[in-house]
Length: 271
Image (cartoon, rainbow, N blue to C red):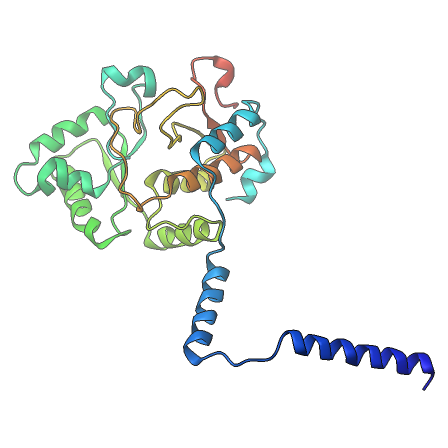
């Protein structure tokens, strides 16, 4: 072996000795080892990141601007709770609806689970004319009975509305999909479920009112819903995370998120 080869080997051994001296091998206790494994698995499944605060998100939206162009390729590749439609809200949401959502909790809170009088509920539903009523009957066990009561109540009186239940497999698939994209909430919002369904069923999707922040883009205070300011239960939904995912779809042209007033004809969805 050449002198250079011996020198390299000696140098390498010397370096290993230094490393061994600086970092002596130790054995962790069994409990500590198990804890390390759990932490590593948790970080793999739920990566640690800092969600932007409300002000940072609004600033990002303002920087993006209102310019939008539909991306047919992106759209194809991605594949509320009885809101009032009375006259005082016509300017905000119009007067026509083809599909509305009904959370089972609303049936319990406002209509006593339809156990006593069904007339009040039937009368309230007349404003929706021939709309479909979507209910997440099988997303949680507590929602199944109220949803079935709504179905039988409207069927018994021959109402114009038709009740729809989401396929449980669809609910599970959508939940897993959004979880893989970073939304870690106890339950997805009904709005995100409907947007997911629309992306698979509709040629073009435009959404309005998906703004889960306490101020608008001009830093003016606004209510959570257009008809009240009742906030969701803390820790139940991850509304800012949902907004960021929808905003990303807007930026790539898969859907259009309307954040400004819709009065200008140029802001309407293209045909």
